[in-house]
Image 1 (tube, helix red, strand yellow):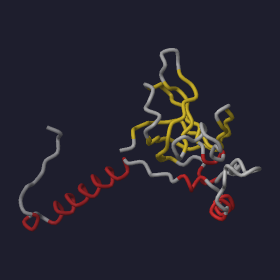
Image 2: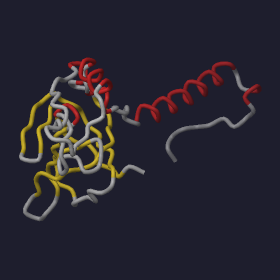
Image 3: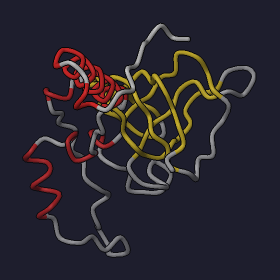
Image 4: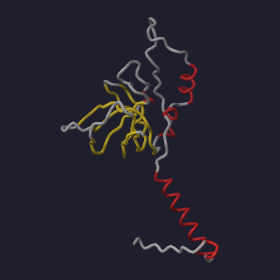
Amino acid sequence: ACGLELDLRPTHLLPMTTRLRRLLFLFALGASAVAAEPAEIDWLKLLPPADLKAMQDAPPVDHNAPGAPTGFQFSGTVPEMDGQSGRIAGYIVPIETDAEGKLSEFFLVPYFGACIHLPAPPPNQIVHVALPEPIEMTDIYAPYWVAGTVKIQRHNDELGASAYAMTAATVTRWE
């Protein structure tokens, strides 16, 4: 049906060239299946080394204490992330919808409630996502995978500021 002929004889009875072709075919099939899955992007990879170290070394914050810090203000970026394709898991904070109420733009954040509760994540832990085609409004209480290409691009909004942007190829619920 697909134009592929398979020789179903046991491998040891096949001529060497047929065994090699079968092996190469199976290898190519496996490689294409692996290549189809976008690489996973870890949120910590978006932090420059100095920001990551400062965050790891920071003492716990008592948000009820007078004069408590309002969160990290890191906005440095990692140049190697510019143009990096992959997928990143996070929560959706809607920014823009179209006339039909479909989602066209949002922030992707690493934890639930970010940008709504203070302190907001630092800009290099927020990704501004634009959708080429608006999608039905998602469940903002659930995590999602967003796949696309990361760009170093600042975006300011009343909900927060991002240091990275992504044009989403896919948005799928994280299961």
